[in-house]
Image 1 (cartoon, rainbow, N blue to C red):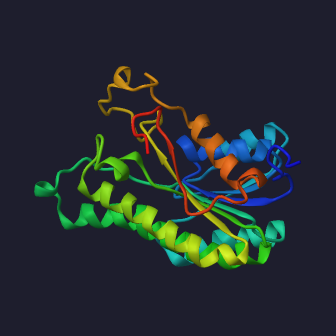
Image 2 (image 1 turned 180 degrees about the vertical axis):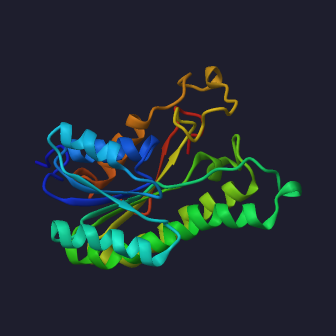
Image 3 (image 1 turned 45 degrees about the horizontal axis):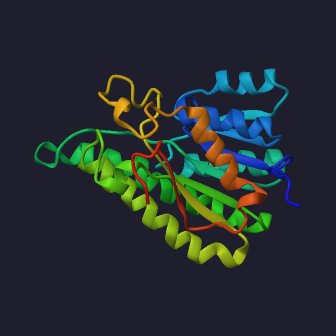
Length: 245
């Protein structure tokens, strides 16, 4: 019989950990006994303190996910501090709403740098360690926007998140034989700093409300758990029924 998660004692790296879904993911993993390196471009002292207050283990690392050297340093912190790396969750992201007619190269580049190139850099850096772990888990964040062509988002965001889904499928095919699963989560609108100030109409959703960071974190915990050991290359839609595949 499989345990509920089976992840206690493992180590994880979570990007974007200062707020929103990523912060909730750090707390959820730590609650299940995972030791976490919390990564963000800004200090993550608050979430690490919150984990410690609950009896868990989390350390912070400041890194730009599109920069190879800073991501490598964050991964090294997990490997040297915890003796290896079992789980990686790339949740850091940026969003824009600009239509293609008004979309200039710098904004296009920023969206791809963080959302897609960041997925490439994090994946490329963590995968050797996940292979060594023997049952590694990698979770990347796509978006409902990539599934339906946008909600309240622009062309660059949709393209970058669509690329994440395609990259994740390639990685799943390549690394499944090494014991590594690679899955994606496509959130719908979630009540988090990324969506504040944007106009959504949740009363029209099948489940008529915004999602919560904790609900997305629960999806991450499932995908990295022993219960999901035979799931790979899958995009899990967590969106209150807005998109049904």
